[in-house]
Image 1: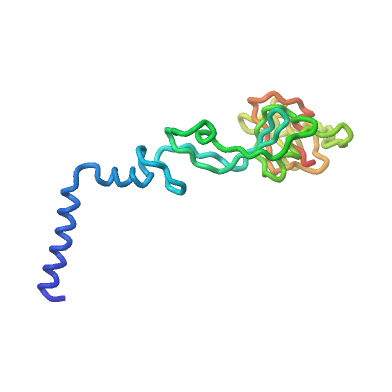
Image 2: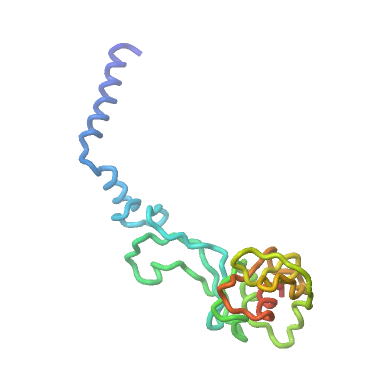
Length: 192
């Protein structure tokens, strides 16, 4: 490159730097806001929000006889839309014929298993567990845990049943902040 070409290139770069330096404070911020990235701009679909609530995928819940599963989403904060746009989305899976095993419970479960695990079984559904009495392991915050086909009562530190068809998911558990009978724990944690 010639000296003249180098000089022109340097002037162009210098002009660009001067132009950017002459921009009022906040040019980049206002550009980000206008493109839905900042807190003031419209949050267009697909644009990342700086303040947001991450909504999980893979949760299932049963309430008032209806099983729902969570959907992956991001809700910008603060949210300025109606209530349904400002809360994490849940998709209705099924209305349970006999109601929920336990009303208001939420577990980690695949969509394909949610109804089978959370809807109350029919009286003639047959057993889902056999009584057992042995030591079992749990983690903090767990009420019941299913491992290797065995349901453990965490409060008793004992295996209280063995699932006839194994656990619905390896390491499935129920949090200790819900009230669940032993039979309900079997119905939720054992594969049906």
